[in-house]
Every structure is written in C-alpha cells, then in structure tokens.
Image (cartoon, rainbow, N blue to C red):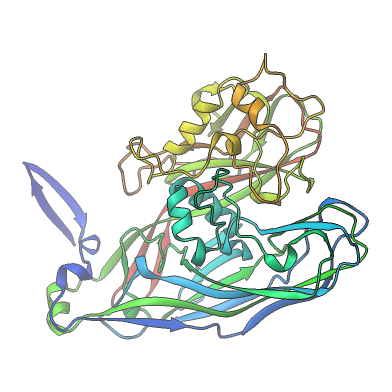
Amino acid sequence: MTVYITMAGIVLGLPSGLLASPETASSEGVQGVWIKVQPNNVSSVAISGTNLQTGTTGVLSQIPFTSQQINFTLPGGRRGMWIDTSRSFLSFRVRYQVTTAGASTSTTTTAFLNAGAMSWFDRETTYNAEGVVLDDMTNLGQIIHHDSLFNYDIAMRDSVALNQGFKFEGSSTGLNDVQGHSIPAFTVSSANSIATGSNYFSYAVPLFNPVVGMLNKSGFFPLGHVPKLDLQLTTAAIAPVSISSSVALTAGAVAYTIDNMSISLFAVYLDAPSLQLLGSPREHYVHAKTYRVAVNQIPANTTGQQSYLIGARGRSVRSIATRVSDSVISTAGSASGIYDSKLPLVSSINYLFNGRDRMPPNPINLSINPSEAFLRTLYSHEEYKADEGRSSVTPSAFCRYWATGTAPSAGTQDQQIIDAGSSSATGNLASFCFAEDLRKFSNSKIMDGQNLSQSAAHFLELNISNPPSNAQNLSFITCLDAVVSVDMESGMVSVMM
C-alpha cells in the first residue's frame, strides 16, 4: 500500500510502513518502561597474570585480551511494544588490576584507556529470530571512536566523559587529546615502583546499533511484533590500554575483567486505541545507517604513486573515511595502535570509485593543504554544520605526520604540520582522517549515497613524497544506508543495504 501526500501541488508517494510511528498515536493508556537484558552465556570476561614488557623504556607492547562472544536475547512477542531507540544503551564495568608489582625504582609510568569505553569491543552482530544476520560491524571500537571525533566537540566530550570513558579535559590548556581516561592503578610518579592494586570503572554508552540503537534513524522499532532479536558483542582481541614507562621494568603483570554487562531498552507499550490510531500496515520499514571496515597496508619505505584496494560495497554509501596507523607501537609510531591515526606525507590523495570516478575530482596535496582535507572530512559527517563546528579534533592532532627518515622542512610543508611534528604520547591521540561525503544532498536522510555495489574496484590513490619508516595500517570506514523491513504479521525481519 502506498500513501500519497500532497504538498504545495507536489504529490509524494511513500510506503505506508514509513509513516507509522508510535508518537503519532499516543493516548492516555500508553506506557513507557525500561527493560534490562543481561547476557545469556557469560557473566564476565577476564584475563589475568599478563606480564608487562620488560627491558624497554617508552610505550610498552600491547597486551592480548580474551576475544569472547557475549550474547543478548532481546525479547519480543508482545504486540504494541515499540523500542524508543534513542534511549538504548549498553552498560558494563571494567577492573584494571596490577597483579604483580613492578620491581624497578625511580619509575614514572602513565596509562590511558584508548579512545573510550567501547574500545573494549571489536564486533557487534545482530540476528533475527531465524538466526539470519541483519547487521555485522567489525572494528566496532574504531568505528565509534571515528564517529565521536567529528560529532562531539570538547564540551560534549567532557559532559559524557564519566559514562563513556573519555578523558575529562575541563579547563586544561592542552585540550582535545581525544584519549580515554587515565588509569590510576597503572600510573606512578617519579621514584616509585608499580604497586599491586586495582581500579574499577563503570561505563554506560549509547547502543551503537542500526536496529534497536542510535543508528536507527527512524527512532522506533516494533520489537513486540517479532519473536525476538539476538545481539552478539565480541570483546577486543587486544586490551585497549596504552602504558608508558620511563625505565625498563624488570617485573610487573596486569589483569583486566569486564563484568556487570547489560543492555537497557526503553519500551513503549501502546494500548488498543493507540494501536487503532497507528493503523495496521503489513510491512513496517526502518531507515538506519551502518558501518563497514576494510583494511590494507602500506609497506615501509614506499614512495611514489600507489593504489590500495578499499573493498567497500553498498547500494547507498553515505561516506568513506581512511585512517592511517603505524604498525610500530611507540611515540614516533602510533602509541595507541589503530586509535592513533597519523597524516601521510603525500603530494596527492584521492579515492577512485568504480575504476573511473575520482573523489575529490582534484586530488589534495596534504603537504601544502591539509586544511582542505580537514574541512572535507567535517562535511562527510551528517551532524556537522559549518556554522556550528561539531568536532573535537584540533590541527595539532589532525596534522601529526607519520614517522619518516627525514622530517619535512618548514620551507616545503604546511606550517601546521611542522608545529605538530611526528611524535605522540599515551595521553593523547593523533586524529588524522581523510573522508569524503558521498551523498547527493547535504540534508538528505535516506538512500541517496553513491552506488558502490556494481564493482569492487574502489581504491585509495596516493603519491607518497616522504616514505614512511614503518609499515602503515590503513582502515577504510564506510558508512552506508540500511532499510530494515518488519513483517508485522509473521514477525520476519530482513535488511536491505
């Protein structure tokens, strides 16, 4: 069924399922209640007795974590129950523990959670009642970090630092470190050793999900009209914590534990009059967006014109972004792994889609015009408005360049790059990103992105002027439209993207 609406002489035809929404059918009998769902397979995820790197000063090697699947079953089966997806959130607690003291004296150590609380999770998969995958996001922590960098400003990050695990900066002069919070148990001042002890941090973060979470742009999902949904989170394979030591440690071990996990949903129960006002479309459609991540690598000492396969696919790709992290964990490389993204020293950078469409049409020279890349990256985020400036990335974070054998000179490079330099510390994150908005209209809401489903021939093109000293890891973050279809009679849920 199609409903036709006439506006100023223009006739619009929309599927009736797009029109049905609970807030248009509210009556006195409508109720709103919170539902808490706990995992049905594990109560906690832990790793213990992991030795810290010994014999080396500076940033310590990353520590593997337990890559554990955590399963949640979201109950349905009650007609008239809708989820207000703007209020869905995930809560959990992490214990950061020193299990074996560090033997060295005169030690100064610093430690920070990478990016924020969601860096503890690498993957999120959503299933319908039949076990069919509706959505599967890998590199979840990196996606959420990327999203928050350009949708939160300093004040917004500070206001949610408690629940989302950001570093609170307040009135500090060194603003915009965009790192996660410090970990006191792992942090000692000069002339001290790392003592045994622990810290607990609780987190509550918006549910980053296209069906029942914040990526559902329609705002509601009829969970009561389906048998159930299953949501699976997979914890990070690498503990997202950066630790730096002023001297070589001769002992020391840490442990991490995630527990108290739950998903909270806000359910709206419609009474009989409200259900009548809502109508009874057979099909209900939900507009959402989701993300996909592909990876590639630039070998060390690479120079000249290069092309790197992206692997992006989708019928409506809204934007695509590239982040560049050093393969070496150090202050000269990327101190916080994939969350530390450096600016590549290239004389031109652009995307090539379908083997023929270059974006931007005129490649950007990052050595002399990083500001254009920064602004185009801001434009690629839908919430960004030129007169509001929603971003927590500063030039010193955006323009930190990758480690090279010869540092660029002020006479040949943009001064912002010279000021920023190539080093970084565990207390902050380099935040370079090369992103393009692929929507046809800047204020659009649905299915107007570029069609990248016809071919897999999509590339990042670089002309590398200063070769990197180490191999560089490329992360391609694609944002694409998804339309979730719900059969209100049978409860079948499917997705198109």
